[in-house]
Image 1 (spheres, helix red, strand yellow):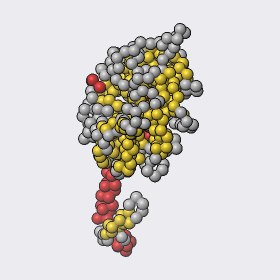
Image 2 (spheres, helix red, strand yellow):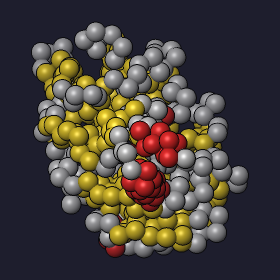
Image 3 (cartoon, rainbow, N blue to C red):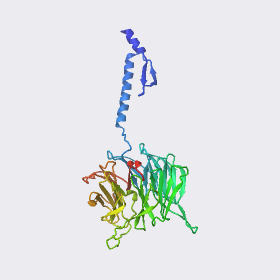
Image 4 (cartoon, rainbow, N blue to C red):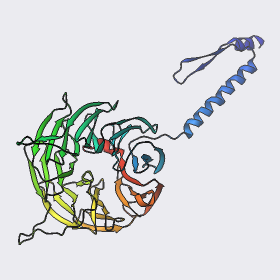
Length: 433
């Protein structure tokens, strides 16, 4: 028995990591009681490590909501799968017109400020990785299809500025300049920038009535197509979910510009005015409270629902032939028109008159089926990826509310500082978003 005890005491006591590697902790403990005590202490340490890991919050990025806090220059991040507030990232600059883009794997968010600042945020660590200045005045941007670059649509200077998504270094500037036959040159503000299939970038020139197409898959990002005199004063645009059609809105023309990206041959005019039998245009204009955000236009199945500019209607088009199907009457002018993931309903927020109201259009019968007021300054509805909840910013109440889209009951709410844009990480996998 004594020999066995000595043999046990002379054995080396080895500590291994989770991969089975022997750690640098070897001791020759001759007292068996001390050996047992030492093993027990390490068991307690290991148990505490497991308990700590269990208590530490972990999450994925597939269903995060990144919400802009305008004046505060910050964003908050919420896990919409659990409706749980995760954190706030501050020091992001002027976010009066702040937009958010995502890396292909949704690990990083890129917050683009009105001051043309770009802030790269790590969504798993909730920290600012890098922030750069990429111009003086910007209205947004987009991630290229290959995920390598962030492209900004700048007002000042009028350009598309392309940054390396990893380093945020500028790799290319495309000046938005038109030269007229008389030698006059006009530098235009850039709007309606989207990514398109084939690693293309499509954008509009607000002050020179043009659409350009650049190839982000080639060296030096050449502009391969230019379309001029497409309509008067383009102000924003969208691309359909499959990436085939680029639609452009105009401030001073009664049509939408339609570019077929498969053909790339012309920009067709799609009317925004329903014509009566006597040939007169139908619909009265109202003051322009705020320019609609066309990336919020709703494409659902074979219908497109677009906010009409300076009119209290939503325009419904058939996407097969782009004929105007119906004008759905609203009680104000629309800012966003956002479709549910199943394509059945479109939620519309209003600005100006009845600006605290949300209206819901049923695409089965093309009628408004619900009108309700979530709170003051209700704006920017955003569905969760499978549509089981809708997030809405209440800008004038400093909070974000979450609604059940079936019962219209409030699920929960979160405090926020003048919240505006709500951006779901599912946008990482959509063209133009």
